[in-house]
Length: 281
Ligand code: SF4
Image 1 (tube, helix red, strand yellow):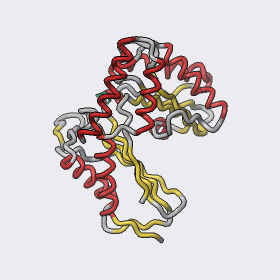
Image 2: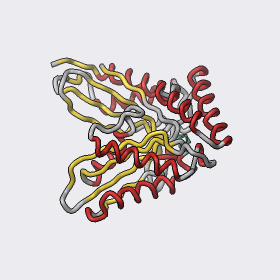
Image 3: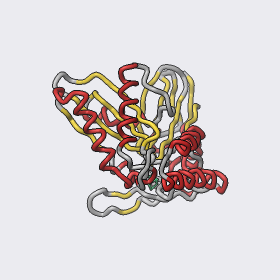
């Protein structure tokens, strides 16, 4: 068994949280540069130029790309031949977020409780942590801060199997249309189809981590992704919702078997602050 200490996890989460907030991934910058060539609206092009300038400034000046530094979503893929030593794993992750918030001057956005007091926890903890046990002796950590603007426009529906692809497509397009400017487009749209209520949402969230332009390995699903891209861009929302031809820069669909009587579909909307950073320990 390979040993990984909680101190290493804390340090990695801190570093990744700061990096994700300061530096838009290189592939996202490239995608926005390409979108600039396609966008037909002058105002849309102006917004894309500002997005690119903002990304450059944030990385250079070492400051957050967006004021909403989000809920810190952490994906942990833990090799089944790894032993985590040194204490509570979740506390180690939260300590990393706590230090990143303080040292990286990130906005603290988490409140407790969600219903009545809504008092700021002061350090952006707790993180939302998803763990998966995978083969091997490594720990892969992905930090993906998620702002409320786009997260609030995400939706899930338990459709009937008879609704079929047309029903699923209608729901996805409605969700994107309703998101409008509140989700700060250009969007990356993560879709989960199948599984059950909670797994479907997880699939949609995980879809946001797939590299840009990488279509699903199943050609039927890849065609569905292409069709959705086309239909979403026909909605005409454009960059920041000012109108234009580029509403989404990517649509990714993840699928899973589901119950004979169910057809769950979840849409996780990602704004242009498509932040994530990863490290393998
Ligand atoms: S939706 Fe995204 S870009 Fe808009 S304010 Fe929130 S985090 Fe920032």
